[in-house]
Image (cartoon, rainbow, N blue to C red; front, side):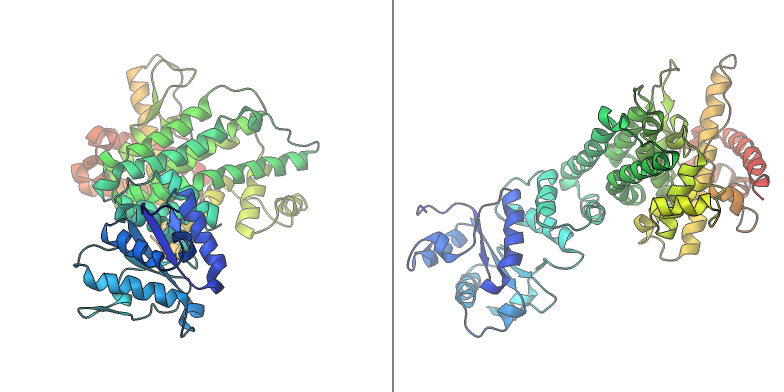
Length: 502
């Protein structure tokens, strides 16, 4: 190694922790951060001390001190010698420049090394590279190291790929956590946009995969049903990280900041309505990511009163389908039934029952066929309700609140979709039959004994008038009469469907 010291990370650890340090090094390598893992990387004899001191002094080194039960148990170790050098330099440096980062490899305490001026090592911010939060902490550590070294922040895709290379932790949790960290920080706006764009591209790659929609489904009806349900699960697994990020952005963002997510929803719906050859059931399933994104936004926005955000995410974005001259809102271009339009209710009930019961798809299908289990009134909505629950667990710990807000989101989307239909019909009264909203779900059958979500919206409009939240958020064009017309039309259809499900 040359005497010239470049910008590096020095990792101090005991050899018993080599496996965990291997994972840390994989993260750094994937994020293209050079590191020194051992003193032998720096040269023979005492030159390692001189090089580390020089690197600390010119700001080109971040020192990671990795602690575990193994390191705490040692009275003497090379790590202690390395840390003593770092602490000695820390004492001589003025406050403000942080380059010494403790890393916990387990839940034990950071040792209280004396840093001078009343400070101890455990006072410094540390990173936890263990447990369920390992992924999020590793991503933050990558960003912190680049900031301390004065380097341009890596692309979020690089940081995310680095973490995934070193751990199998949940991508959904990581996206939600990173969105929380970046959303309200203007300096990280580009970084967050890139992160969301990466997720959108992952989903679009699947939606645009011609081989995927042309795949064989099997020979028997049972095989076909299970295969379609498996593909629905796969598409949800692919789009769930985007929805996890969207849930945070919908609640805490502003309409101006929601462009990446609104663009993602529009891209998903646009890809779903694009003509394609292949198996009709698999082609229709392309609607699933966009539909789930729309509902995630509605559930997060309606429950928190962020109606302007809902407008920006699901009303303003539009696509142009093969039949219309003018663009149409995404909530008219898709709905909960679009992904399953060319399947029987055996598919949706198998998917929903297997998911809610935690069973294998083929076992559930057999139970349904033999009538050991009954079919749902609204299987798609039941499945959505179940798979979205973890995304909203931090918002509503109790199920009753979640159930009520899910009903409210269905009613809000249904009314907004009806408004889109009404507006288009009024603009072209001689055009095709405009029909009605198709956003109906479990709130229909629940309305008899768990409260009528549509009636609640009507009551709010009656009592609040022009001050009603959706109107103040710009929905229905801010027009009370238009909102009332949409609610009345949707309520009529809603009550009719509900009466048939009693």
